[in-house]
Image (cartoon, rainbow, N blue to C red):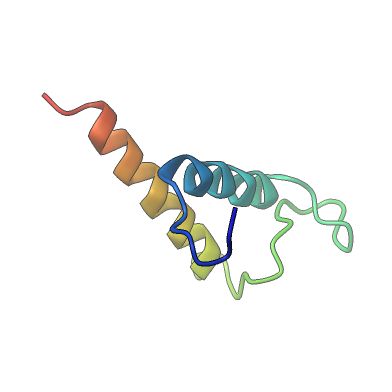
Length: 66
């Protein structure tokens, strides 16, 4: 894929799933605490997690349209 081609929704969803996995996996530097994201600044402040939830919400809204 060329670098200037738009990213497909499937690729975005796959990337969002990897972001969600990183947040629910164990961090190497804190083995007893959940979270493997280096962007997290607090319990509820992570731009990557917000982006991933937005992508998943968009896909779910399309899947469940009436």
